[in-house]
Length: 159
Image (cartoon, rainbow, N blue to C red; front, side):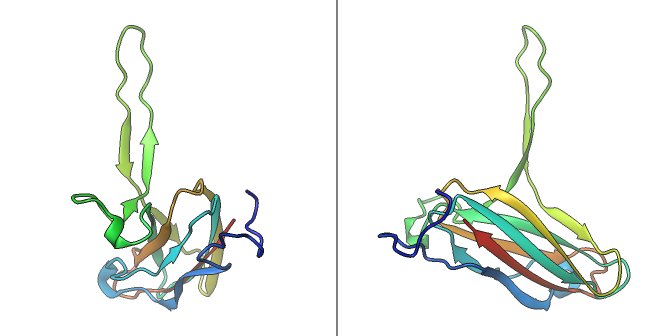
């Protein structure tokens, strides 16, 4: 599904661009966003994310982390399960004949470090959603100069 036409009998609960973080200063002291903006992503196959960051001081940087939910509403989350699932990184182990292989998986986040004063922007993706992710959000934090947080805006295109 390349796109969801306007005449679709099941229109999505989102419209591009999806604003995942309005332009604002990051939290002080390097804290993750307390309440990241969430959006529906039902039916989207892919997502491309655009970031605009203005550092607060030389050496400014920010971390970001994608979180997804396969549940349309919190009431659908099974007992003991997490509503929001954090992205992961996978590294396969080496293959050796006649021996089992151990691979590794861990939660992941990315860091962007500023290169100059003024607003800097970049795009990340596409990220495969496979039409199975109901909601998305991206949390962020200042990680370069935590005492002087920069400003960050995040938007996405779902398709």
